[in-house]
Length: 156
Image 1 (cartoon, one colour):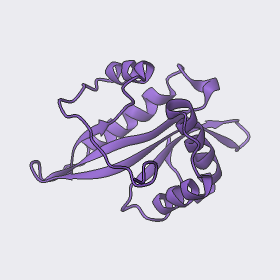
Image 2 (image 1 turned 90 degrees about the vertical axis):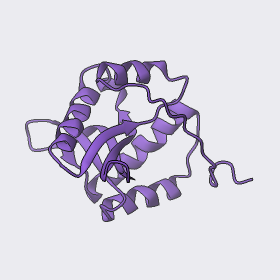
Image 3 (image 1 turned 60 degrees about the horizontal axis):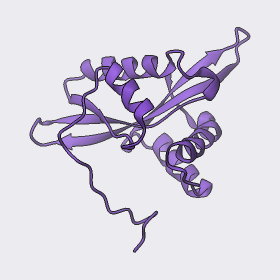
Image 4 (image 1 turned 60 degrees about the vertical axis):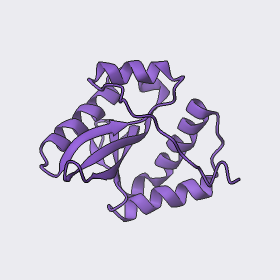
């Protein structure tokens, strides 16, 4: 487990585009996606990517999973929630504990920081597989509903 660097940009773009296609049937603009991921990699104020590597024993590593952590300030708590986003595990490595290891790492890291009050995520309403995985990790459905006005995908 490690924080991603600019060396990971290509795999993060590929994983992000694939995840959007799999979960929401969206074809992302790869130029925009690349710029967005690069913005995170170049400025920790946006958040950071965590990646899970597979080491081949010869010094090479291949990224097999990713998640993006972004921040939400809570005035009620005087602390920050970490949001888990852009989760992707390579298909060959699914159901083998990759997400679990990333999730546990993030929760452990968040608990060690007095300026972090919790971990949140959102999931597509129909994505029962992901919801089941999140429940197994101790996450609970929130009483909040999410609303949005998306200027990129729904510019009207």
